[in-house]
Amino acid sequence: MIKVLIVDDSIVVQRLLTRELGKFPDIQVVGAAVDPYVARERIVELSPDVITLDIEMPRMDGLTFLEKLMKHMPMRVIVVSSLSQEGSETALRALSLGAIDVVGKPSSQFSVPDVAGRLVTAIRGAAVAKLRPVAPATRTPVKSTVGGGLRTTGRVLCIGSSTGGTRALEDILPAFPADGPATVIVQHMPSDFTGPFARRLDGLCSMSVREARDGDPVVQGSILVAPGGRHTTVVRNGAHYQIRIEDSGPVQHHRPSVDVLFQSAAKCAGANAMGMLLTGMGSDGARGLGALRMAGGRTVAQDEASSVVWGMPRVAIEMGAAEAVLGLDRMSEAALNWWRSGRIDESRASA
Figure 1 (cartoon, rainbow, N blue to C red):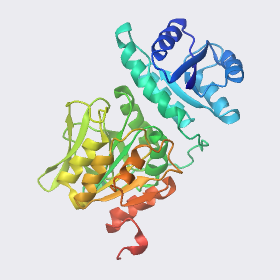
Figure 2 (cartoon, rainbow, N blue to C red; figure 1 turned 180 degrees about the vertical axis):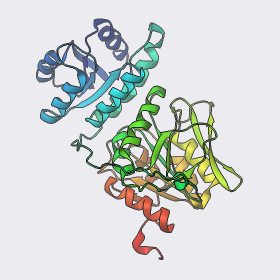
Figure 3 (cartoon, rainbow, N blue to C red; figure 1 turned 60 degrees about the horizontal axis):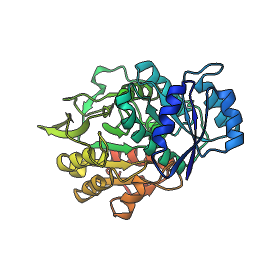
Figure 4 (cartoon, helix red, strand yellow; figure 1 turned 30 degrees about the vertical axis):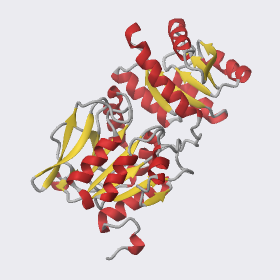
C-alpha cells in the first residue's frame, strides 16, 4: 500500500484526486493539506510515502516548500501543476529541485480520469524511486555563434528517458561541446512541458536545444527534444537525416515512445547510430535498443545504482539489448567517445 498526502489549496481538487486514487487498491490517500505549513504537520503525523504538491498556494508557494523539504526532510514528491506555459516552466524548475515527476492538473471534469491514470503511474514510479541530492548547475554554457557550426552528420545519438530523466539529461548534455553530436531525445512528459524543457536545456548546454519539428535536419551541434503527445522518428533524406513527427497511437503506453525513436534510427542509420536508455519506469525503449544493437549501432543502458527508477534500462539489459551498462557519471564520456571514434570506450579506440 502506497500512502499518499495531497497538498493543494483547492478543496475541489483534493476531493477529486482522493476519489480517483481511491479506486486503486495499492494506493491510500492518508490525508490532505491546504498549504505547506499544514503539510509539514501532516508529514510528521502521517509519514506518507509520496506527496502530490501544487505550486500556487497561500502562505508559501510550492517551489519554496519543495526546496526546504528536500533540504531538511527529503521525500518523494510529484508536482500536480497547471499545464499553462508559465505553469510548465515552474514545474520543470520543481524537477530540478528534486521532484520525481510532474502531472498536469485536470482542466475539467472530463479530464479527471485521464489525469488520475497518469498520476497513478507517477505515484507508483515515485514509490520505488531513489532520492538523490540536488546539486545546482554551475556550468555556464558557451554557445557557438558561427552560422556554419551546425553541420550535417553521419552519426546520430538517440536518448530515451522517463522518470528521473530530466535531471539525468541535465547531467549528461551540458558536457557536450557546442559542435557536439547530433542528438534526438524522447523524454516522457506532457505535451505542454517539452517546449519549456527544451528551452531549459538550451540555457544549460553549449549545444543548441529546442523542441523538434517535422522536417528538422538532424545536424551536428543540435539537440532535438521530441514534442509531447506525438511520436518522433529519424528518417534518411538523401545523404542526410531529418525528423518526422507522427500521430500514430501510443506504443508501450507512451507517445512519444522511445521504442519508436530507436527503431527508426536502427532502420535508417544502423551502425551510425547510438542508443542511450536512461532511468524510467516500465519497458519503453528496451525493444528499440535491441533493434539498434541488431542493426550494428552502439547501445548503452543506465545502471541500477544511478537510476532513479531502474525499469526501462533493466528490461533492456535483461533482453541483451545493452552493449554496455554505465553509471550516469560515465554517459557523457561514452557518447563523446563514440561520436569521435565510433567506440564507447576511448581506451580501446583507434586514434
